[in-house]
Image 1 (tube, protein in one colour):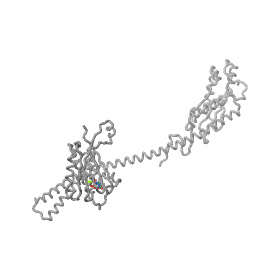
Image 2 (tube, rainbow, N blue to C red):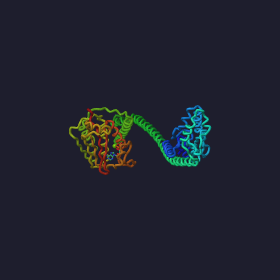
Image 3 (cartoon, protein in one colour):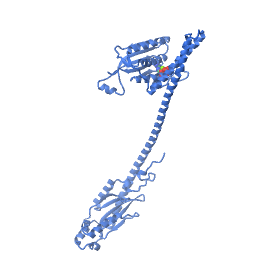
Image 4 (cartoon, rainbow, N blue to C red):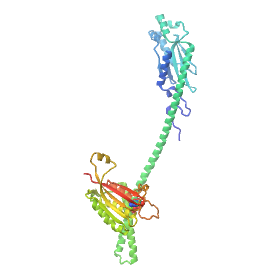
Length: 468
Ligand SMILES: Nc1ncnc2c1ncn2[C@@H]1O[C@H](COP(=O)(O)OP(=O)(O)OP(=O)(O)O)[C@@H](O)[C@H]1O
Ligand SMILES: [Mg+2]
């Protein structure tokens, strides 16, 4: 973990140092203090930051200055005074008193925090209570000055005794100190919070980018796998068709009469060749579906005929295992727009599983029924607009071994088998359902499964009726 950067904040979190008043204290709070100070003592106050920025000021224009500014030398004295006061900067922690030839004074008070100067405040103009007469230098500024007027205006300025001035400045210093302390604490807390949030964000961003990288890499590998599957399956198919073709020719005695044992061997080659071809076709299908290049040849299909065809195809196979085949088909089901060979492939895969995973003497049921089409994407909207679409649901129900709920989300993954051990009882590669799911989705439909362990399983394929 690297240390969070605090450069932008202008102070060091580790030490908690601040270089300037304005970094931590709210200007509004400073103005409030000046205002209440003015209300209490009738003295003008200005608070400056260490870099001379005026942070807060509450003052009343001195009428004497307004009067003096009517005379050239008076104007000069006033502007010089204002200038000098502004430029007066205490060098240590003691108060600097700025005296003017007009007898008026300003107190410039340093503001320190943790031993460091962070700004200053200026109190004044005021007149020391000890001043009894109008200073001569002031009267001599211009022969046309009205001496009485000057005296009146001078007396109008606040008069402050020396020890009172001291008490006032130390009071204001105390208030500012307190304000600095509490503001600094609040500021530190919030800065630490910001720093920790920033750090968490950085860590999160780093993790996200690592994940993104891993995801991209996986996608790349997945694509490579699909390409590999496509190429290998394709290359395997060509020699395999020759093997099957020649074994068929041998069986047909084209190369001469076979002995009983030779025929047995050739039949095994033929049978295993066909099995291998089936597997390779599945791999090709899967890679085509994964790459989205599977083409469907759509035509009309009657659900009732689909069920009938399925039952007659699987009857011989089921009979060998003494499994009863039942069918149930609602009347008046809509004609579907599908690729009939693919729909047969879908239902055959489910039927194969149903028989494979049933005990001898069980029952397998094929059914077709009408149902509402609930598409995740626009289902709710379509129902609201009264344009709900129908669908045909095909159920393949068995009374076989069933599956636990935790298995149900995995069985549609390619190569997944509930019993994945080498010693498993049932054959197969675990590709069937992954192809089925993708084929159903390519038809715009969906597939669901419910199962009770030890009791049986129901797969339901729903295909929406064609849009008008
Ligand atoms: N009707 C069912 N009853 C119980 N388990 C099932 C049923 N259908 C599928 N399964 C479980 O889901 C797994 C995956 O099924 P899938 O059809 O994809 O593969 P497979 O039948 O093992 O092999 P393949 O279909 O490629 O020959 C099966 O191995 C089995 O464990
Ligand atoms: Mg299967």
